[in-house]
View 1 (cartoon, helix red, strand yellow):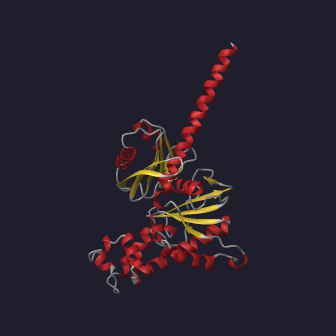
View 2 (cartoon, helix red, strand yellow):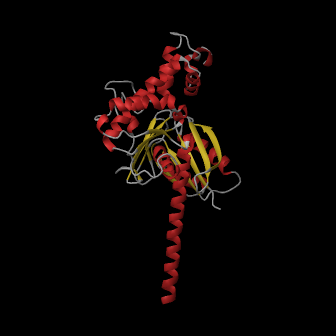
View 3 (cartoon, one colour):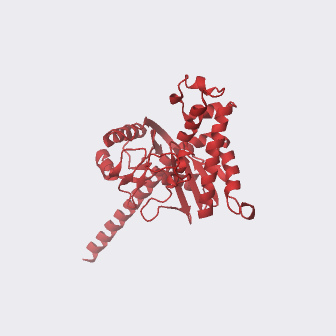
Amino acid sequence: MALFIGVDIGGTKVLAAAVTSTGRVLRTALRTTPGRRVESRLVEDALTEAVEEAAGLRRPAAIGIAAAGFVDAQGERVRFAPHLPWRDEGVRARLAERWSAPVVLDNDANCAARAELAYGAASGAQDAVVVTMGTGIGGAIVLDGAVHRGYNGMAGEYGHMQVVPDGRPCECGGTGCWEQYASGNALARFARKRIGQEPTVLDAACGGDPAQLTGPMVTDAARAGDAVALAAFESVGGWLGVGVANLVAAFDPEVVVVGGGLSAAGDLLLEPARAALRESLVGAPHRTVPPVTRAALGPEAGAVGAADLARERFRTVGTRARARRRAARGTGQRR
């Protein structure tokens, strides 16, 4: 049986997964993302290590890359990645040469949406909005039962919609972007500002150094009932709901699926988001407000979707090759 690997690369981690044809993850490998102020080679070294570990002793038939950035319509180049060093680089061809294997490339949220549509929380939906929350915000749009990539291949980059004019500076170069108020970074930033100002277990969790505070620490504290951590989720979840209201107004989806690492917080995040959605959505009392649900595949959705994309392209190429061989044989026989 052919082996397909999906690799999800975000602002802080690289996750590679060997995935079955039914979306089941067989084996994973995790690496730290070197960051955006390093050479591209160092990022690709981390990708390579993760792929080799996930593949084990087997040779992958094809590898899918889910990249946190703007991927062109041809699936060849990463045009821009706010949290990675890639700037208009031919990532797909370079990695295919390095790995001596077929490689496909798409945006990470598109891959996550593909997985949720095939195996998860968006299964059966014709129209859906997917929001992935990690270091920043990624997004994808499902229209008529398929992921919509847009003219340039960059649809769904709504993490960089401006929600606060002249607001916080963003790593994309803009200001007031949605992900500056609703993301893992925003959650930790909110909590850091409260440390030292009011009692919180987060002070001990980060050893008295707010700079060491992470999103998972805030999540653990919120689950334990810490007031500062709960307030952080109220803020981030509220901003999530405000942005989702805009997306619902634009696309009128059947369901809104929230994935990414921050979605592991579950209703700590989603309940304030649902409340803000109902309050912010125009005409909410006179329409069906879509459910806001956690992604079924969790933080592995991007890798699962990338592997699924690799499998589809591999099969398509194989089908075309077989058709050409049959046509060639037919031509030979007629001669």
